[in-house]
Length: 113
Image (cartoon, rainbow, N blue to C red; front, side, top):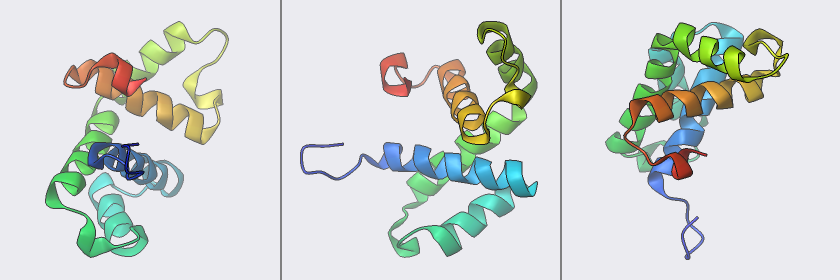
């Protein structure tokens, strides 16, 4: 959070991406539809969600799903005695999202962690 108490837009976008991934995982909703539903019906102020925020959140969620096999393989390789499918839904999605963002290399690892 910034000093004024407001969250950074990219931080908010990551939260949105997680919620989009949750809809995708639980309801098996396509990412584009889950993003549309989230921003139109669940975002506190749909008008305030900038195109940049929406785009970043949607792309991060889509990239995570597109790279699911290598991401899950990496998680399974590093998580002792825990396969991704055995993890709690939110734990699994947070790990997938963070791994995807780390693999993209655009954000410093300390920010992702």
